[in-house]
Image 1 (tube, rainbow, N blue to C red):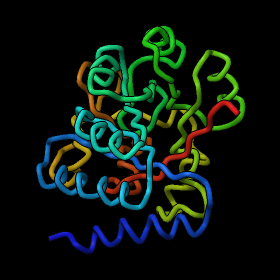
Image 2: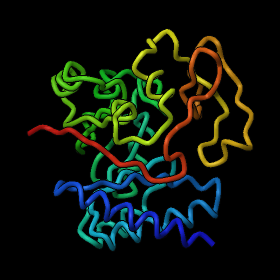
Image 3: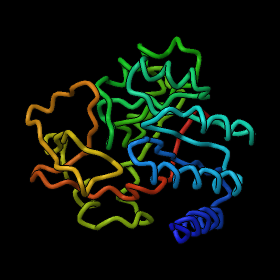
Amino acid sequence: VYAPALIFIRDGIKYIRSLTKQPLGFNALIEKGSKKYLDRMSDWIDIALEENIRFFVTSLGKPDWVCKRVHQAGGFVYHDVTNRHFAKKGIDSGVDGLICVNNRAGGHLGSHSMEDMYEELHDLGLPLICAGGIGSEIELSKALKIGFDGVQMGTRFVASTECNTLEDYKIAIVNEINAAIIIAYQFHSTGLSKTKLKYNPSGALTPRTRTIVINKTGIPLPRPCITLPDVIAIATRG
């Protein structure tokens, strides 16, 4: 019973199209932890395809079924990966490119630097997009110089006028420094209200970690559209 959500997605896509003639992308979190959520995401993907979106980013799940649908419509699927193991799984599922999520990313970050990720994945034969720590032309130029085909930015746009998140959150992103950010463990992106956050003061990453950025007070910062597709902005070689 989520017809209003389906209407919201379709109307949202149409509204964005009224503001720009540029191509749109759709970010699909396809984790199987909640069947209800996965079924909803499946319907959202169908709506996006009906609305002529042809670029999709998938994360936290096996994207084979997304690739099948999108490729049938002549589209492309890029998949979030944090290491070579998940990159090869994505390739086996038929993805067209890899979003290389490094240790500077917000949300579910990886454990490797952008340099190490490129070194680990550059021989796989697919376009590589650097995700994490891109906040200005300096980082963009660095990523392209390393060899990435483009970058993905998310946090950079949270403080924008168009983003409808809390003003306090926007101010925190602009004013906080790296030392004020720590990593919380045992976080489930489709069940935040049901999961107790546990903190690791050392900030060390462990295998199979899911993470969310929180501020120095230990209070989780709200993540916009945590259960809705995000608008994707990708800067590529021109």
